[in-house]
Image 1 (cartoon, rainbow, N blue to C red):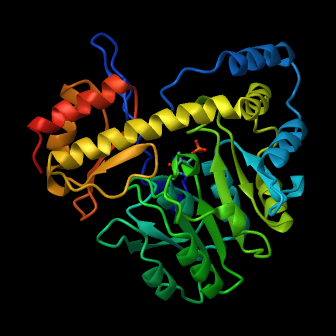
Image 2: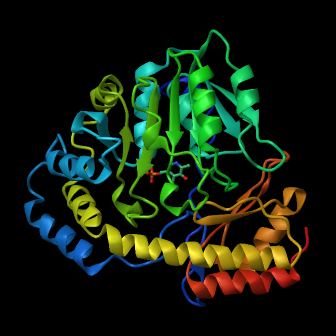
Length: 362
Ligand SMILES: *Cc1c(COP(=O)(O)O)cnc(C)c1O
């Protein structure tokens, strides 16, 4: 006799972790959209210092980190209060908490596809039913089709901008009109995991869209631009009723002592971190231009990654990259949106991808 596992759990697609860099020959991990820069000395020092209290539980309310974040996000036009924020162990955890808080079994959650691999898993774990709306041909969200997909069972809509793994953003005006057309009892989560890398001036600005709209939550993370992927911290910006619901279902003391210290130090080092982000954006520009020069059609790349829409050639192209020491992320499902996502990494890694591209065809 074995313990029965809930059908929704037994049937889960498993999340595939990014391929690690193989040691030996120099290889580059370009499979998880991490920040390739090592930690800044001041962030490392503050984090290490915090370890002297590892025998104590962390501050359950994350109060110092909350205060620092609220101050950081507040502008004259858009004040952000502490009760507009909720932390979690990565913004994926915050998304789980939001869905757990609102989904009854069988409730529908709409999102674009292909999009973030964690969405189908999160929806299913939380008892929801995924409604995947195909991307438009240019790899952007088809908001019109997403609106048309709403039914009486719809409880949430996930909007990923820039979209992981394809790269384009959703336009601000377009998103605003979309939100205003969606019934107010439906949660709209705007996943801005890569917002710091966006250069398109017409891109959605989530922080201007949640206020006065109690059904809108903006999700952000310290994993990408802030270089804290290993510490697992993300957050929601939303109406206090939603952030309270996130806290209510969160595991207690989720955000660890060093993670809280790292967040405060990283916010303090914001300018230095954004200088790194600008370097990565410049690498991205070179990479995209180089690949397009070689004749490859790339969608707009607004995150810290590029998308090779290789469809049925995906495994071969990924194998070529791996053979060159580039650990990339292939998406192989047999569907129309199969391809290879490559994180913008160290300059040497990016140069190597351009070299590999000379031998690639798809
Ligand atoms: C990386 C990523 C996140 C954040 O992940 P966490 O590490 O859990 O904060 C969220 N959404 C998308 C689309 C991502 O790519």
